[in-house]
Image (spheres, rainbow, N blue to C red):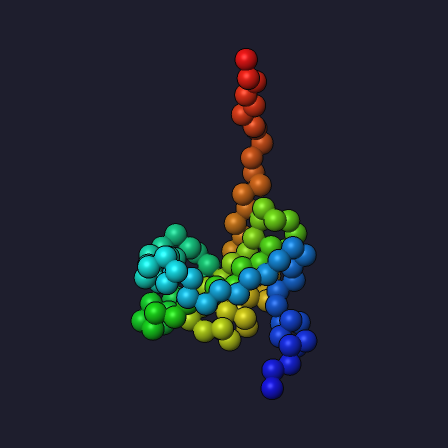
Length: 108
């Protein structure tokens, strides 16, 4: 039987949200390679290759502090992505909060 309290405790710390996605590439009719071509979020190169070979992709994405900045990890199995995502030192940060100027238009 699954212990959901232990499962929840294994998730990386997140104040905003945490998402687990299985095979998101298939929703877009893409290969694993196409879906992750610009991603540097693989837990390892072996996991990347295994995911490509098996067409299985697990993505864990979490927003630790704000809704505009997230961490994400990819692996070929749920176990691998969970085990290697908790350590914050290994995460890949994608920060889109670096906008410092805004284009303000005044209507005539």
